[in-house]
Length: 118
Image 1 (cartoon, rainbow, N blue to C red):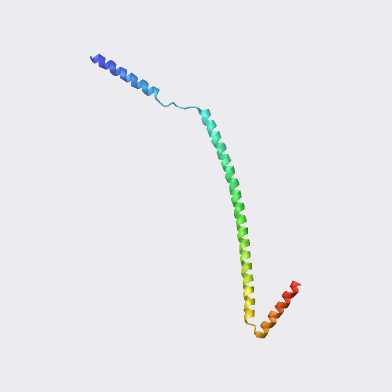
Image 2: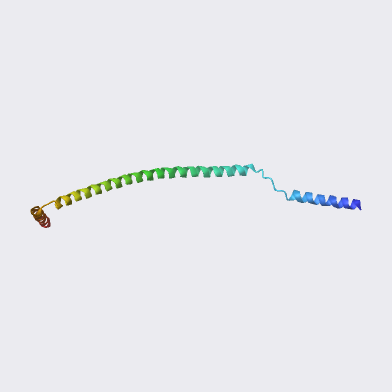
């Protein structure tokens, strides 16, 4: 009976060993595929670097355009403020006119508008 147990134990050991050997993960030593994969990745990296450089140039161009538009807007804003100040100065000057000066101002204004209509 002892021999029978030893034989069964030996058979079980052989079955477990064979199962473990058959189920083991396969080792990949396919260096050619790794090299190809590396080349593909390097090509992608180079493409992305080129795209990134082009985008950086575009960002720089857009920043320059934005700066010039901002400066133009500031100049326009300053011009509007100057025109408003001039208008307010003229209105204040008219406010200080006496009765006779107002009649003269508006009659002269009416003459100017009639001349432009003809």
